[in-house]
Image (cartoon, rainbow, N blue to C red):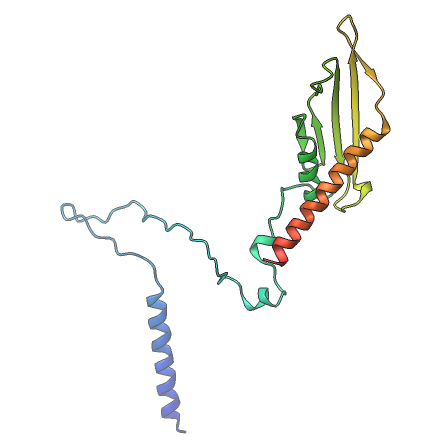
Amino acid sequence: MSAHYYRLLLAVAASLSLMTAGCGSDRARQAADPVTGRVPTQPAPQKAAIPDPQRTDETLWTLLGLAKRESQRNVGPQTGGTVSPVLWVAAREAIEFAGTASEDPMTGLLVTNWYSPPAKPNERLRVSVFILSRALRSDSVAVTVERQVRSPAGEWSDTPVAADVVAGLENAILLRARQIHAERYRSTYYN
């Protein structure tokens, strides 16, 4: 083939690329005001984001598993580097019956309000949960329970707590964390 033919192909390719670049522009023409002749200064209304049910934003790399999907990047609450987001959510759900007095997701500390069981108005409990690791293990959660009993004079005094109460709370948090982890795994890899 002659050089003339290759030059012609190059010119056609350049023309097509310029045409497609011009067609891809979504800039709307702004009409001038017929009285003043000025172009309006207000910005054009933004298009609403439409969810993509067919996931056309996935590339070959995400389909092959070499890149992460967008939905996998922000799973769970923003926690500190040594705090498991799954354990954090599980701990919040496990102690929500008492209400939260203080929480710090960066350090992994949750403290409840004083809680009086409905059947025992002269007794109150306060639970503190410490999340110590990102791992989903029994040594990643520490629970302390403070218990006070009201005397006939109306003063609160500290009393000991049974060890099975603390162990039961830790087990409830770990069980819920495993359920949350399994739900997220199924929704990520099987949907």
